[in-house]
Each structure stands twice: as C-alpha cells, then as structure tokens.
Image 1 (cartoon, rainbow, N blue to C red):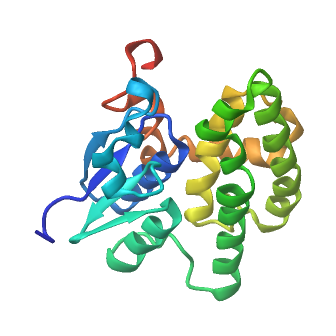
Image 2: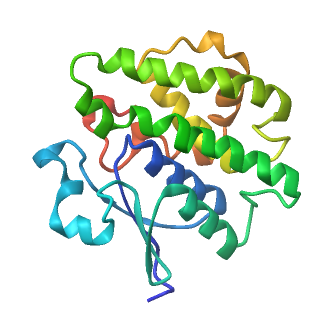
Length: 215
C-alpha cells in the first residue's frame, strides 16, 4: 500500500544507495532496507529477481508509493517533491540549477567512471584508474564549489549537491586520493559529516556492513 514504508534495495558501500539513505534521513522518512550484495554470488544485482526491479541491474532501487524507482537523483527529487520537511532543492531557480549542476558532475562525470562494474572490467590498474577520474572530476568541482559554497555546497542550506558530495569523498578516500588538493571539498565534507543524517547513513553502520568495516 502507498502508506507503507518505502523499501530501499541497496548496498552499504554503494554511493548511490548512500545518497538515497541521506535523503530519507534528512526528510525524516522511515524506510526499510533490503541489502543487495554486489560481490556475493557473482553479484546479486544480476539475479533475475532483481532485474525485474531494476533492469539496469544496479543499486539502488526504491519501492515507494506503489512505484519502483531507480537512479538516485530521480529518487531524491521524487522524495523532495512528495514529502514535507527540509527542501533538498532550493526554491531559487539559479541556486537550484547550481545544485543540479554539482549533482550531475558527480553522478554523471565522476562516479560512473569508478563504480564497481567499471573497476571490475579494468584489470590490474584499478586504483590508478579510479584516482585519475576522481582527481579529474574534483579538479573541476573545487573551483565551482569555491564560487557556490557557503556553509554547504550551495549557500547555507543542505541540498542534493551535498547528498552527492559526501559519498563521492568517501570513494575518493577509499581510492587514496589526496584530499589536501581540494580544500573546499574537504571542508564541506567535514562539515556535512557532523550532521546526523549523513552520519547515521554512513557505510560503516548499515545492516549489511561486514563486521570488519563497522565502526
């Protein structure tokens, strides 16, 4: 029924799943999690059962209000448009465009080039490959954020841009990117991680986080 809690099919370390967890948390929405292990059994996202939920065979997929949605930015905007509370996209059209621009740089220009599926196809140079594309994206993002940022990515209100930034910095740190090159990104990330919605949704404390990665 439309009134039941949304179901997030995701993976603890998937940055796209983490984005959706943050959005739900910022809006104060209770949701259920169904873990999809991207490594086990050759990748549970490739099962026939999951393929019917998301033909792209990626996480997340979200069952909400009687529909199934994939693509984290589409999910976040749907949540924003249908649920009260904190606005994840600003009312001002220019600020909203900046939020979408920053979100797209990360969601289209950085994350897909270093996601698990791509990294698995690369062969031996996995870390160097991921570092290259994260560095390249952050070199563009740093001067943009210098212009748009206040306390957060766009001004002083948390937005979808921040929701995209934090998981991408987590990936950058996993791939040993030197974050000192990007002082604005680094500062924003530290500020955002102090917010409960970013903290409680962190990959280190999810239902499917392996014991050795729990904090």
